[in-house]
Amino acid sequence: MVMARKEDHLRMRMEHIRFGKEELERRRKSPVHTKAEEIDAQLAEHNHVYIVDPRLGFNQRTFRFWINRRSAGEEMEFSGWQLGHRHTVEAVIYVLKGHGYSVIDGIKYPWEPGDMICVPVFAWHRHHNESGDELLYLAATTGPLSMAMGIAIYEEEKYPEYWIFAQKGEEAMKTLIPGGAEIPAEARVKFDSSKWKPEKSGGANGPTPAEIYYRQLAYAEGEEKRRRAGKVLVKGKNLQFGSTPMGRVAYAVDPALGFHVKILNTLVAEIPAGKRSGAHRHIYEETNYILSGEGYSIIEDQRYDWKKGDTLVIPVFAWHQHFNTGRETARFLAHTGRVAMESTGYVHTQQGEPADY
Image (cartoon, rainbow, N blue to C red):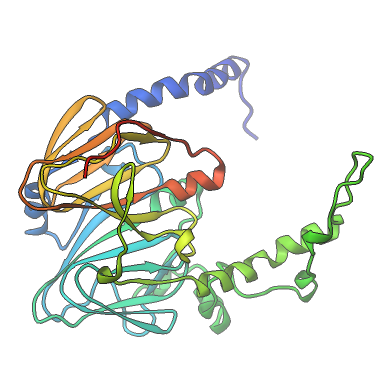
């Protein structure tokens, strides 16, 4: 047994007190701008290049961002033969170049440049490049958060010796529930929350302890159904842009649109030539990849000049605003951890100067 010494208690208490201020310093020191030339140089030597990752010094905790290149006829990253791979992380893939299809949970999804694939948690998936040219795609995955929580599992068809749950048998390989599909029959007891009402005396007639626990046992089964019912494919040509104080944006992957995501959401924003986005800040992480255009951003009073292929990492609660100085419309692919913060109740957004578009 490990017990804290008397002098450890004050030290551990002070760590909590100091954390917020020290976190501000970590955010200030974290990289913000990665240039396209740096990414291209890495891609010349490696097919898989991490752009944003806490292991690279970024102060980003919920998701990482990377780019992958595959030659003509070559499979997308570790695709396998029949199953592919699966993981206890959310993933959104954006196709930059090439065409092909993905098989996710046994369903085929064709894609082309500008399309996105949202992979359900723990669903077996594999991707196939049908291009006569190289394939280039971006991916955001919530591995950092899952690893920090100690629940990151990655099962790869080519490496069964590292399987955690798939080795349990055929049923465990088909379910999206980590650990298998064993749901006790009594766990399927349904509790009708509409019948619960507080008593006028101030007390409460809620579910019994057994009902609460059975709902806990049955949760995974319901979650699996929700994951399988969630949307997977986003066609770039079907994105619907709308006006907001931040500018013209098209939400792509979001719970409000039928995607079963709990951590990550994705949108595409555009800024006309000579115009600017709105200024705002928020308590969640954000990574922007420049799909087109050139300009600069002001992030916490610092200027960062960008162009197509660059990546910007917005520190949590940092004021930021983007300006298009080029002759074409600038487009941003933006991934954020907003959904995770909404789930915990910590999300907060402040709007400053409105967009000019």
